[in-house]
Image 1 (spheres, rainbow, N blue to C red):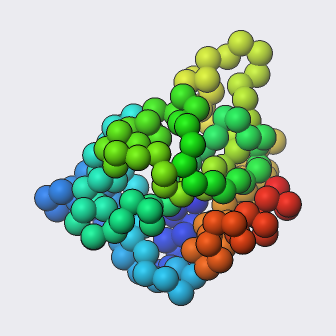
Image 2: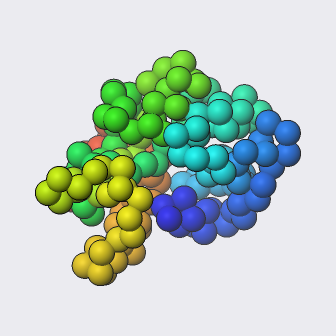
Length: 168
């Protein structure tokens, strides 16, 4: 949802690629004054590293410039955090990307979805639809995550953290 918002802002139409890019929908454009390649792997999330690596190679993008927007259980719902590197926290998509790129040292826009209630399995929790209460806040969360991504592109990590973290 955040990627769709970023694509709208950049005027980018995401389309299926060919060859090494065939496992993702992607598009090139300008966002926050910078050239960007926006992409969504078409594979299962657990296998997203292959398409990410293929797109990095095809577009000659260094992994240091990779920004991954992802859901985060360890952050309260409707909060957004930025960071570079770190562990994957059980997130199999991040694990796949780290394995395929050979590093954990890429930028992350972490979109908080909160912890599952009670003893609910985290895997079931992340696959469920948003609750009615969460849906009321979802548009704002998507906009804030897109804003945070743009701040990251414009200001760099530390300056963007100073802007984004106090408000969420």
